[in-house]
Length: 379
Image (cartoon, rainbow, N blue to C red; front, top):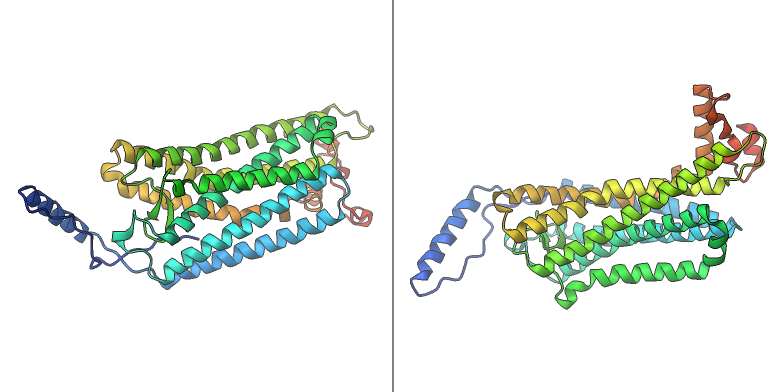
């Protein structure tokens, strides 16, 4: 979504205050040196191609989320199994959050492109729109990570302790959990309103995020540690829960005697496969920004960033570009990793590999039954 833009070298730069005492000469000299340094940089105005990429990304994300939302809502309306209904409630909320989180920041970034982006002198500063854009990125970044973690924990409990799950997990409690997730993410995003951290324009001036590259203070470091820590912890918990769920289902299959009724339900397999897809997507898309932001803040605060500033700026831009793809790829997890698709993939792979007499033969096509028996017979 965010394409790199540049600026014109003739853009004005902020000069330090020149004092009337002898120290003023030093400040003037520093200002002149700063100008001579910036003259070697080539800044270009944002191109129409960058705005086109933003529009294309927003369109792709909106279409993907609408298709996934239609599939999930239709499945939720037809679902009578309570555990599956709870999972679909979380998944639907995740897709809706992803959709809104794709449109709002994307529209603000597009506005910055169309207005020529923030001037170089305003980079590492802030205004009302920057505060809103930065808060939106933190809020819509934490929400999917929190939801993925909650969904993985819910499925882990359902697979390993089904009786305890049936007594503890209800639709009402699931809705309360979703409300707590949204409130927690909003609380973190609003911390700069209480002077606990700050948002600034980031290079190349087309997006805003936590101040991590220059003039970083203790509260900024604490803010980015909190943001990155919560995100990485959510990914780690989701990884552990999904691993336990997957191993439990695999062991249940391997221990099943031929001809006996399978104990691992098909809907459990489908949900765990989808959760693994969500987790992998989130790890690939969000881990770079979480890690790069933390690295940049620490090096900036300790003063070791030095001549590597442009390097860390590039890392941050790469990280935010990957993060925006999370809201595009998440819906395809529900579109592609459904039981109907999984069943056909399994049958094709089984026919190609000739695994009818092997251990994998225990994973029968009935593991992924569709709601229509005729479809199974045709396959």
